Image (cartoon, rainbow, N blue to C red; front, side):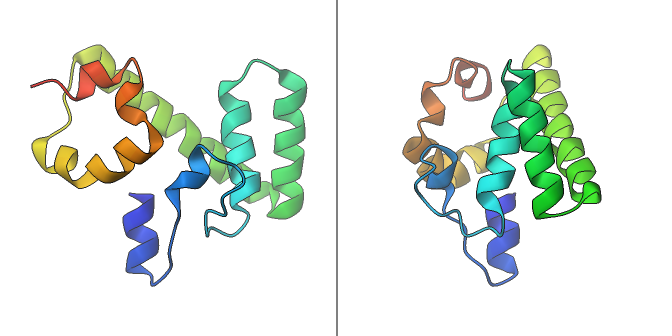
Length: 117
């Protein structure tokens, strides 16, 4: 969704930044946003507090709220889909093959839930 939205707006995004922080994502404040996303799934509350502060400083308190809502929504959607056994539709399997392979997503344990026939 992000890649398509950015490209539709005339920008570019490099999804390799998701797994290699030396790569520039092409998204403004991408490193700060990725650090926040990482911190939300981590276990270190000090790292999370620091990531929140960095995001508020770099963007705004409102941007922190929006980023937190997006992280929460994606986590909820993934967990609900996995719990229900919802598989990824064939159109999305084909359309995401390039970046799933590049990022190693097919090797995630949950891939067996979403990619099965």
